[in-house]
Length: 296
Image (cartoon, rainbow, N blue to C red; front, side, top):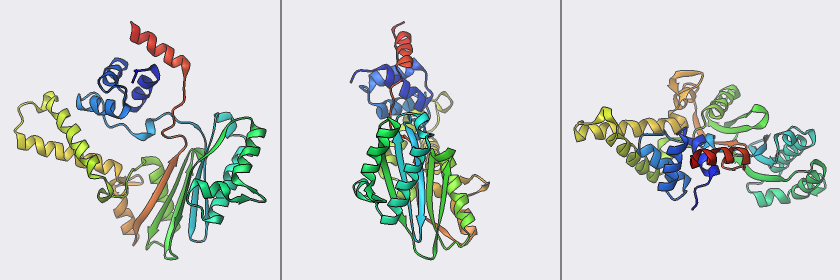
């Protein structure tokens, strides 16, 4: 795959590495972003990249709760200006309410559900004709709980980030709201270490081992000591991506699981949407600037 300026820009934003290092990494990985991130980390040039760094499309998330169901949707539009349009904002809320009313759990059933007398799909088509931009229902999720559970919901930055979390054994909704706010801020990828794929752990162990080999501070360390250092780094990375293990933002002396346990409960599940994560948008001016630098 050809290494384009857009790929270089994306890699820079995700890793914080220098432009030329990003180009070398992409050249070495045949333009594969994820492999290039691993290459940079193995060389000790970049830390773990987060999904937060990906280029975002525009749009909004919205959450609706009804009885023991909570639904969240992400609706994308082309520009930030359009996302502030009152008609677009109402459409997103209407879709969320329709999804929870119907208990829809996928895009297909959500698009067929009806807002008043027309389907969600037709409502989107009508909105496109009024707003003048492409509008897409990108993601839908519906969580269900028992009567003994509690939902925590939180929408941040006017709808740029949305979170639903379910807690068991907790009667205080403010506790669930605090956990939802933590999730919005800390962007965990998994609930607990047990949920992390072994492939991820193996890959992280390999990356940390390769990075340790080129770290001047670790040269000459006994092999056993090096293994312990690598294990410690892997454990630290797992704590950073697992909700249960993350230090609670309001009280870092306890992790999130302990905070919930202190209130008599446990975390059942959570979902977090950030508008546009994983979607790339072309920015021609920056691309030209990057390529001019690369050619020097």
